Amino acid sequence: MIQITETEISLDEMIKRARSKDAGAMVTFLGTVRDDGMERIEVEAFREAALMELEAIQEEAMSRFHLIAAEVVHRTGTLAVGESILAIVCSAAHREEAFSGCRYIIEELKKRAPLWKKELGEKCERWVGQTST
Amino acid sequence: MIQITETEISLDEMIKRARSKDAGAMVTFLGTVRDDGMERIEVEAFREAALMELEAIQEEAMSRFHLIAAEVVHRTGTLAVGESILAIVCSAAHREEAFSGCRYIIEELKKRAPLWKKELGEKCERWVGQTST
Amino acid sequence: MRIMVLAFASFREILGKERVLFLKESATVSDLLEELAAARPAFKEAAFDDTGTLRDYVLLMVNRKRIDPTQDLSRPLQEGDELAIFPPLAGG
Amino acid sequence: MRIMVLAFASFREILGKERVLFLKESATVSDLLEELAAARPAFKEAAFDDTGTLRDYVLLMVNRKRIDPTQDLSRPLQEGDELAIFPPLAGG
Image 1 (cartoon, rainbow over the protein chains, first blue to last red):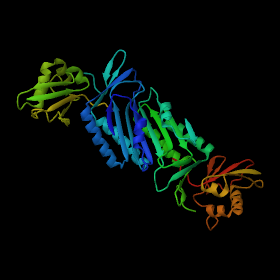
Image 2 (image 1 turned 135 degrees about the horizontal axis):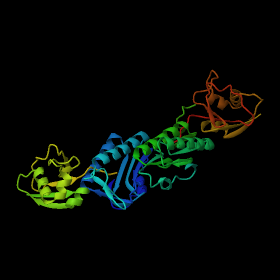
Image 3 (image 1 turned 60 degrees about the vertical axis):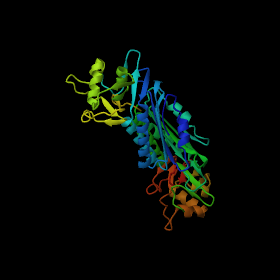
Image 4 (image 1 turned 180 degrees about the horizontal axis):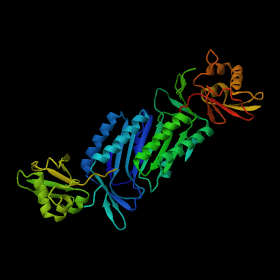
């Protein structure tokens, strides 16, 4: 399941969906808001394009690493320090595949999915990964 | 936290404990009972020695990969297909460290921690990883 | 012809999330960007350097497919096309 | 002297989980294993090959530290030592 959502990510639900009697390993990546001196972040998506891209990435990961299930949920909106921005869950027969699949999805997502983060502090705000204009 | 337990693993609790405002990434490994033609497995531990070894592995992972938290819970007793045998949760500032730390712990656990699995089927039973005697 | 322009992140803050532009037939991506720059000095400053070249970090999609700003700016747009403008990706 | 023997997995099924053995002073790991083999033919068959050599997959710990069966079988045990016998590890 691929989702871009304004509401809190339920890793629990994702893990339930990824469980299978054929799976011996499940690897989960959770990206959380790290305290970098800011108070909160805003996450923005080009929703339709991001969903398309995430589906493509999911399919690539499933077939390359023989995954049994791959779940990706990306949060949008305003998030406080400590909250989950992104969750990826991959299940496979063996751990090698589950680790590689999960890693593949996060790396490709960062390169290809049209999503942006803005850090908001008391005094300043800054789009992540952009040189100041 | 390191634990060897007869009761069901709560990944949720482990993730709560591993959350931190300094963490940007959390990687979780869940080992589950895969349907290999058997009905259930029995997991046995040399409890005191396994706890000692898991603590040593946890400390190595924490310092090598600058982890913020590392949680390891291994189940013992009788488990059905689909149940969780093992959960590892690692949080770190960045994903590279969280992935490497989690991977390190599972690989070392398999090599070093005195734990055993027996597959139980309708007609046969078999200690995993052992040539028949 | 009618082109939908979508802008995200820092470019959304300058241009708004969506706007419809009416351009002459056979207008190119470059024509559209110049029209936006003429209408919004803040966009011109954010997207172009002093020599009038599109800055490196300006990313573009036409109909949800990335185009290469070093090669595809002369590409003619079609009635109903959607052009998206955004800075480098930062998801996850 | 008193030695505690712990056995796990397939060796637990043969030997039971815990047993206390009383050995003569200066008995070695090897002496202990031979005593067990003499008492339990099933253990002898599981742990030793036809030439009387300890099989590869027999793992040993003395006081919760692994010992190397190719080198340390002649190691003398001490009063109160704990010897653990088990097959290859299979956790996770």
